[in-house]
Image 1: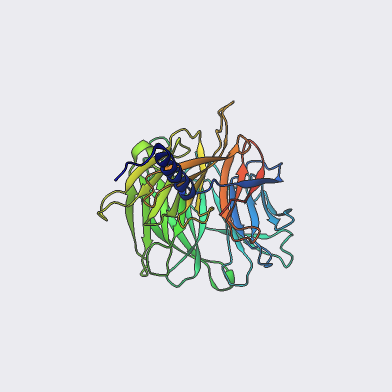
Image 2: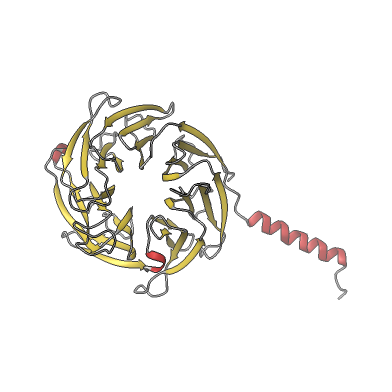
Amino acid sequence: MPCPSPTGYVSLAAAMLSLSAVAAPPEPSFRAVNVDTNITIGYGLALADVDGDRRTDILLCDKSQIAWYQNPSWEKHVIAEKLTLLDHVCIAAADVDGDGKAEIAVGAGWNPGDTRNSGALFFLQPPVDRRTAWTPVPLPHDPTIHRIRWVRNHQGRLTLVSAPLHGRGNNPGTGEGDGVRIQRYSPATAMKVPWSIEVLDASHHKTHNLDPIQWDEDPADELLLGSKEGAFLIDPGADGSSTTRQLGSAENGGFGEIRAGRLAKSRFVAGISPMHGNQLVVLTPTASSGELWNRHVLDDGLIDGHALACADFLGLGSDQVVVGWRAMNRPGAKVGVKIFTPLDPEGSQWRQTLIDDNGMACEDLQVADLNGDGRPDIVAAGRATRNLKIYFNESRR
């Protein structure tokens, strides 16, 4: 058989390159819109339908204000101000009672150095006109309350889970003292107080964030927790007990932000390591269920990484990871937002794409479809940049 001609080799190579180009995921593309350019800190974001019009609104927990921005005009409505003398710090919003309108809880009284007397937790009771002031109802709390989330229990009902930064009486410098109490608040009928409270976990001495995730077949959400001790999965039981399983080690100081994602062949956990750290890490399952998961460092050049989400922006059947960093107290350092796209079903190779180059000192970010086109968009709040932005997803699919 005659050998292929040189032209044949060139054609084959060109075909292979063409096939490779077709197989490569498209680059993500976003259109940035500034919704507010005069926020103070932008501690926390939530995305939910506040007014019942079936559109997802933006909720912002700022230093001394709680506000929501009405989709699609993004008009700002301040619903609470100066709930405590110290800063507001976190927010959670979801339709808890099933009327199509979000219920809102807020954490405040932020002083991470006071592990005995700081903190406050409120449920906000809505008025008839949800664009006006809401009534704060105090709930019991632990000091240094830092993150709250609405989480489903074994009856499928939404409950509020809180995670302080430190345990009560904990020495922030050494970690000595009580463990951080991850607590579940179960609302009474018609959202009236008092709410019942149970402790889900108290084995960590410094935590930063948590992510509700449907991990198994029961109706209750599990919780991913990022702490100084590592990355953990908390599985609440139907009898009020819970089990805690470690997925990631305390290497590089443990984890701050933590989120769950899906690959074509498995799930993964993304995290920022350590708290306010330099590494974006992805954990993937090992062959043995009892082992710590495989650790993959996607980026070790973050400067004060502080925001994280996982979603399939490109319609690939696998999630991408979006990460934001804020470079707090680092004059001259760049800030921004990046997206990492898996290039194989196992998540062993990832491509990074810069979404915002120095225009977002990212304190928090959240993901949802804001304009109803079936594609997730990104909302981010910037501390030093003092802005609230929507990044509308215009990626090719």
